[in-house]
Length: 573
Image 1: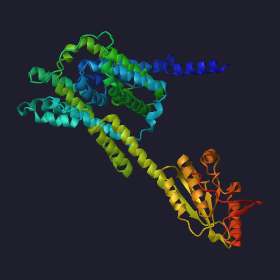
Image 2: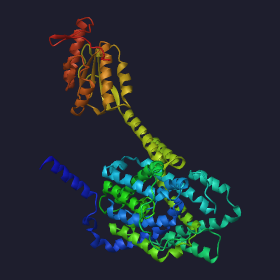
Image 3: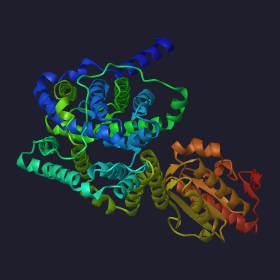
Image 4: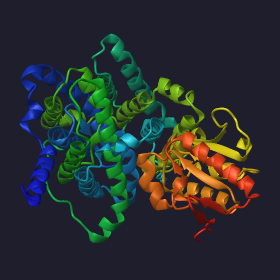
């Protein structure tokens, strides 16, 4: 087969791996009953969350509901996970809120299209596995920060006030408290507390009782029968809108590039984390990270065409799906069908739900996102992990989600490099065997662990402190990691010692490091090509011969070596 034909075949296999196939549903005949039950359960649970996230983002309850329906089914069909449930999530709301406040509701659909295209591109470029490089403390700090922001965002509705003008959730919550009419606070706060109480008690009555739905029904009935002065969701469409392309403006698109990149990064990270968690909770088979990105990108694009929000995989709904018996993509599809039924059959009832009830649901959702056991385990693990966790959480709340992940990874990388650097070192050893006269003029150094930019300078200082020595033997056989900076430091060590008239012998360069040390100049920095050894005994014997000849020559640094004379080379600066 020609090169062109082979490349075309590989491309075909790659593209097919990113697209749906009938193999995705091979287990449906065996699992369909559990999938139907799980889909119904998740659909009921997703309803209040979709409405609440839509309202909280500023896009409206309708947008949240559309996202759960359209993105839910598209991600289920095209995604890389067999069990993932997608839709609007709290993390996405955190990002969307300030953008909607700055540019208006009309940008939500445009952002869905832009972010969706970026996520698809990431999947096509095989960037799906990049999420595995995010450290656990960063993920948990990120999650804690999101939970705090979601809770703070609900404060205005929970006290019957308007959100403050600040784009920061904490500042906006404080501003809303400062403008509240305290004579009207008791009613919405009472409804929030009632929702929380019902959600806490419902699982004790029956473990599968959907506390959020029960709480919303109870609060809605009370609010309407008592004619309580509470803001409601308001009118919802009685059918799904027709798909349409949002109005695009070149100037507006330019200003939305930053938010779109942030939303795309968030969608990718959250979706892949959710899919990874799902694999650990069930035996539904592995997930394809790159296909998952393509599926989530398509889901956001489809949602945008219908006027919805960007979508991500939802960890909580995915977990409920698994616990309820879902085992294939059919469960997530059924979840979307259940929500379609709500649109066509119950929008009149849904429009009467008080916003305070949705705030209560989201506050409880935020509280449940925080695992006290997890926080304790991270804080009690190591100082570096605790620092990464706290910094990530604080930056998430005070600055930005994606900035927080970047800073968290950078801090974690710093501590990891410091740890690896501390585990590496240069150690002076005694010469093995029976000592002979002149051995005190020979220094044997063993390089351990990792010799890279984080540890190289310290090793250089250690060796350069050597005094009253004629020969130095550098053992590199125990060196596990070597980069260009480390190899350059070895070169500088050899050159510095040779300038002082000390002969340097190198023993045990590993084959995997040979090309690097050759290119960087380690070998050419040696006084003679015969100063490179594979066996320690040979290196020691050679070193002793140097000491003997140096003593006989009265300390001369010009050394006759195998019939020819070599003088010390000066650095090639």
